[in-house]
Length: 497
Image (cartoon, rainbow, N blue to C red; front, top):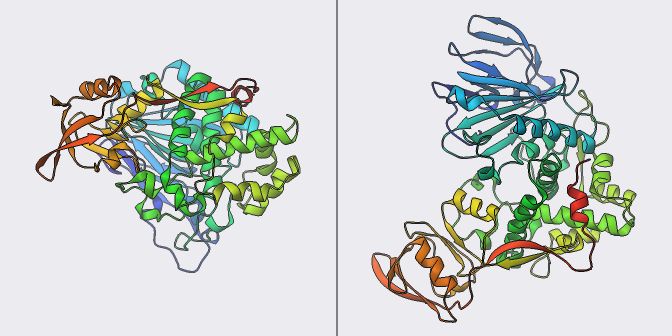
């Protein structure tokens, strides 16, 4: 299900076939043929990667296909809908398919379309021939502000805010979402981890290589969106600073390595957890970005600049065609490809990262690329956008908490100053140094603490309690700064191809 609303509304319908199908047990889905049809309310325009055979009144009859293809080809339909070609109508064509709540929301500025067309070119410059006849970016624009995506081989389900293409500065956290999902056509469908492939949907799978499946895809989403102009390099560095700070400050790594984080139960991934940085969940996304930055830096170092992560992708994902069956890969396949480019003990390097605990420096790739994580008392635009998305003032790297404008504490950094003072998520801040709580009052108190602890009055279990937080620094927000004497290879990585 795409983030951003229900599957069925009067204006928009999403059809996830896997929720509607009964099929013979024990048969490979690729060996079962189906002739699907779909009836929609009058006035709704459908989009899908399935090929239409004919339309009779409100019923669409699709060409006969395999159950495997059907389960991977959802339909999105809307009353207010538009299709925008992003490439020529040839093999591998890509279209942006929009459904919205209002007709005016379908107007995408020309600059955004130009960037999306550049994105397709940048993706192909890395991955080569496409594993699809055509690709549909099934995009649902909604007013709830949520964003998210689901990948498929010939389409992706994208949920975006109605203002996404118009309020570009405010969308810095989601500009690479489309890039991420398209890359999955290669990393996830044309090639997929061996233990993540299954012949039918009811066969259990494992996720031991999610740091490759999702982590490298997240990495490429950041890089390719920047190469396409959807981020400036400065904006992308601010995004990387947030991820670098998060991964470097994960106390949960003391007990849960990245190779264990991939085992987090899938059915719980969308549920909130009270101690995110200690429990660890889905860190293979953001930490995966740091990991593959380190791999790129090591490839460059070992080959004296002749090899990089682009060369890995071209080699590892080579041979994609429309009819090519899914090719599975293993940890050994990843190491073998890296070794072909730059001989080294890649098994030890990768295992030293994914199995590591507190000894790991997750910023090593950034440093080798010529940038280092620092903290200043002024937040970047990306950090402010992250605060706005979560609806909090984020003092994770100073007091060690995040708090809503109502005073409700949403997170407490494990082991941080607020944690040591006994705070927990769910308590409500009533006053700061005896002054009634507001976000501005709290920020001012931290900024001008002058070496004195900060006194919070909180509502804990319906009792007013004074809590002294022993933090004597100032506000701290992550950003990247250049490393003196080291070449800036990050800029080369992010430059258009």
